Image (cartoon, rainbow, N blue to C red; front, side, top):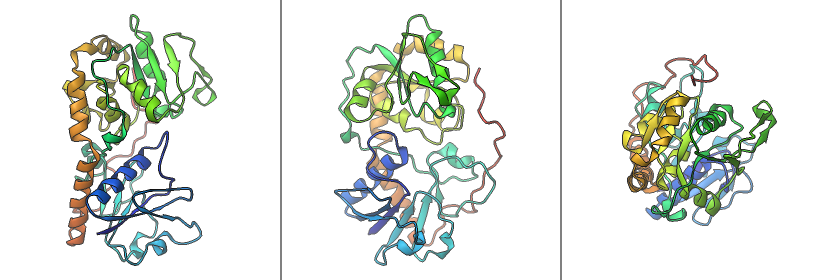
Length: 329
């Protein structure tokens, strides 16, 4: 099958970029399975296992779909999707806080994500773990980590810092943030127990995760999926986060602890050794890999090709979120 994967970004991603990482590994796995992959993405993109077409912003995106394509996988919702004459689906990667209807062929990235839009259509994000440094699960763990775009306030790096500062002697490495940040309201962290690494990727990020006791992830929004979670689990790190969005769904009791109370997360990280690093690793390896994701999407493609709808009715947000940030105590 000739499959077109569409996203308005550059691939491959080197540092931050969850959607870009997911669509890269999706295309790679589909190619391994014998399908012919083309990416329709932004200028500057390259790929050694698929064709690449640069998006031309001056032309309707629908008119840029090659004639010989059998199936189109959008990763954003084009305004004029009703003009398409190819089988397609749309993966919704983020949270959209309005009550407009989504396309009938929408797919979400977790069960919770789908259910908040009155849907049951979802596929978990998966990664190609062979691209990651193999973890050393017997290595001594010396600190906790935060992983995410710290300047984005819903990620609540301040909360992660407070969880650690209120512990007896734990330390935190912030991956994705800096010590002094004007965007965070002149945040300046003095504590020597907190260190910052900015945006990191590749072997450096892998090495930092592999030395961590666990991920502190007190987000203040409904996390649609959370690649930071599965990447951390892969390196044997239990997850200590808030009970929002997909987090309780992915972070089952054997792999971490959820609370929106800082003091409870502080108590939980002090007891981090109750979680088995090998179990965390095996869970990520088997449940959140790119082959499993690709096979799940192929099932969705076949449904559409058989004239089945991915949703019985058009998905729609159940309830507008009026809080800018979900509760954190």
